[in-house]
Length: 203
Image (cartoon, rainbow, N blue to C red; front, top):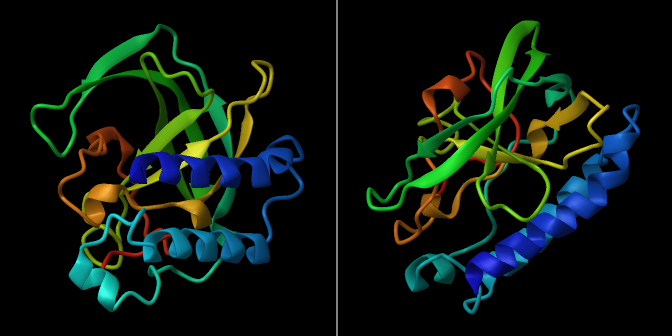
């Protein structure tokens, strides 16, 4: 139930920014990002849908976020790979391995530093889009040590330019409760810069 609600929240967020993916001159406004964060906090506050323990819920006042910063909203070029490349993506539970496809490489700049992130798609995934997990220089300090996730709406095949907005980066559920099995960030998706945007570590 909790996982389904979280997926529903992500779908709602994707619908919010869907038009912006095609209009490269705009993106979700700081106000819309804050509204989405409030909606997510409400889901976490509800004991029927929250991954938090009863003790944590008693003192819950909201998740922790960096301030919305437009400098962490960057234009990226999706470079297709020459051949399909599938592999077993490890998770936080050793007995849970997930087959993933490297769908392409996102190339971009953050704070004048060249960066790349691999975009993945899980084998058998029905929802079009890319899963982009990452670690960065804040991992294990200001942000969750095992990394954060981004979701990108897939565009038509002839469109290679994507807006990557790190203000929408979120923690996996295993950041709040180790009962959840979450994909681990492959080593190839470590960024050499500090991403001071998106969700912070918990608690």
